[in-house]
Length: 198
Image (tube, rainbow, N blue to C red; front, side, top):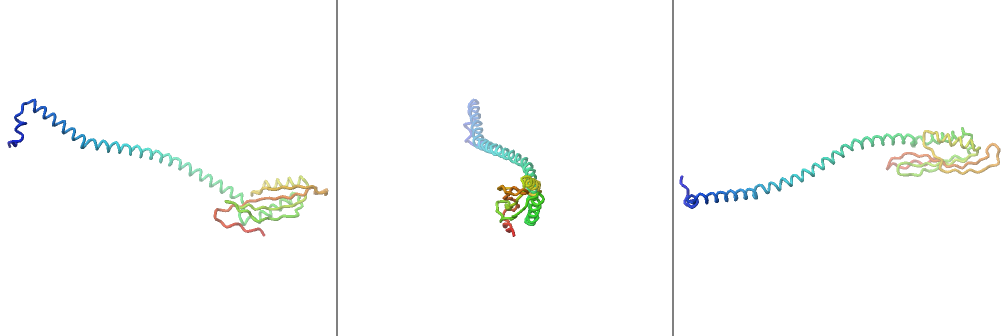
């Protein structure tokens, strides 16, 4: 099949001109291919590489979080166990009368002549209620010290928050002690306040 007449000047041109025209054509084709096909692909590849780097950083950060998650779960379990152990040391509502009896028995067993044993209304805090107890007694210094020792050895938390000692002219009970003891009751957030003592 013969070529159309438009290609006659190229076909009849001398060999060096054909070579120059061929090289120029290849350069034009290569440049067009680069600018139309390769340059956009390279831009897309560099953009995808940047995204890959960002995703790899996210994956590493998430792996570190997952590795720490097990540690945090262990710590949470340990804290929960400690909280439960501490809750056991704080009396519940039903145990308060028994605790009052235990403190009163400790005073009697220590040799204190108790003239007043009066629980006061609870003071509500965030996670607990503080229940003060007023105790007035007469005894010797050693008996008061023995009472403090018995209170310190109780399974439940009972603190001596106020102490007022005064001398009395009695040979068997030379000291009058006016004490305020405090015990604590755990109360979850949102729970109603504890009942007032009777």
